[in-house]
Length: 355
Image (cartoon, rainbow, N blue to C red; front, side):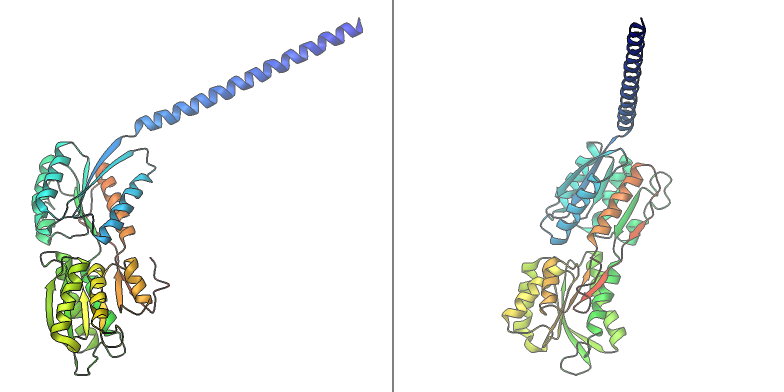
């Protein structure tokens, strides 16, 4: 009898344990299902945001870095939304870019990020975006102040457009300072003035205008010397054109050229090729500066074949452009401008500048 009672008791305990285990499993499953449902609900609450991006041309060295980082950054967002980013090549043709913008608008894109082919087309782009009530973020090529102020106080479109970039005046000043800070202030022949060649990106582009103007005015202010412009040519930001322009200038002006200013590094890379081909030596009988801090330019500075450049921070700029686009889509009011600082880069800080 005692054995029978013990056996019955053991069975009851076993059934109790099985019941508890089943209840526990059921509770765990229920919790898992609830968590999955919460995640599904969160995902469902997100939306697909269509971002239309037009780059003035894909084969620009700097804008290649920029657009690659922009695409990457949008893909890293964790706000529950899905960002469908369509980046198109303006091919250096304003008509092509205008067609792209029209298509973005017709297809109901939520926000546009525009790297203008021609800065003077900004007002037209803004008119189109205002009519469609689509936020617009201009990047890299700064519209004129008049264009940026066009809808500043507009009740419906004010705060729905912005420019994200680095102040080109600062980059020009930094170029001038790089040369003025040299022991001889760039004055190789000791005549109290700097004889120079200017390779300009695009005279209609605000960045090119500012870099051209402020590189020289800042050089004069900091060095205390006068200047003599031997030549200024339009290089369209292109390496091959930079090489051609500087090769011709070296042939025409020879040793009289003390410094070559280039509005960007691509043209400076071409200039460096021309300088080497002409038997001149950077740092010894000529100086050369650019803007962007492209990898090839950094290599030239390390090798002593380029005097300096100015780091154009494509990472911070592209991230801020994406942030501004997201803010606009969420209904937040945008500032007119978001600025990112340039950084001077020479052999003195080549290994330590914050790239």
